[in-house]
Amino acid sequence: MIEVGKRLKQVRQELCINQKQLSESLAVGQGTVSKLELGIQALDVDHIHALYEHYNINPMYLILGHEPMIINDEISNLTQIKVHLKHIKHHVTSIEASIS
Image 1 (cartoon, rainbow, N blue to C red):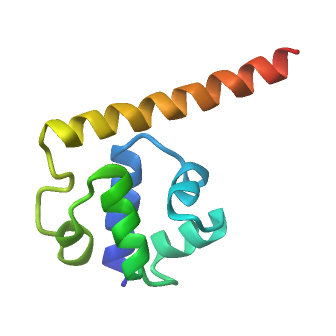
Image 2: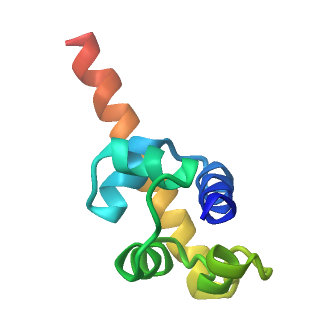
């Protein structure tokens, strides 16, 4: 379970997102993401499916460590761009709110 958690953390770092952002995609609390990454709590089918749906993460990478981490094709690349744009928008909104 610890190895799966390490791979989940690698995925999150590869996507350049923090635990809070990942928790939103998985519809769990940030504490749950921390437990998943530490191997304290196991990834379930819903988590794996959400990672695939949101980020095109290869389920076999998460479970067994089989490459590639991200299933790359044109749709995958567009999804990744969409995710990054969403996070940029979130940060801009936060900055604007702090300035007001």
